Amino acid sequence: MSFKMHFGHDIYHLRTDKLKLTQQQVADATFISLREYQKIEKGEIAPGSEIFLRLVFFLNVNIENYRQDVLNRPPL
Image (cartoon, rainbow, N blue to C red; front, top):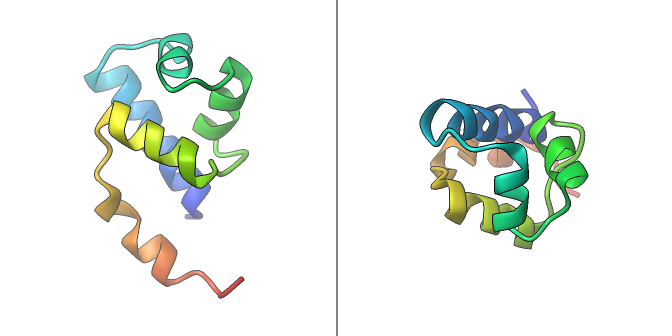
């Protein structure tokens, strides 16, 4: 699974199952547009580093989940 799909899947489940938040609430709290958040959650786009960190801190995402995604990725 690609990083963007993996991250989108994880934030969807954190948002809906654990935190019971709407997409709009997460977008507002992390200062991004609703549409951008929806694209990240669907795995259509990967967030930039600043938005990634905002989402990680707000949703309390365990970034260790992405170690293999990053280590197995070919160099840019």
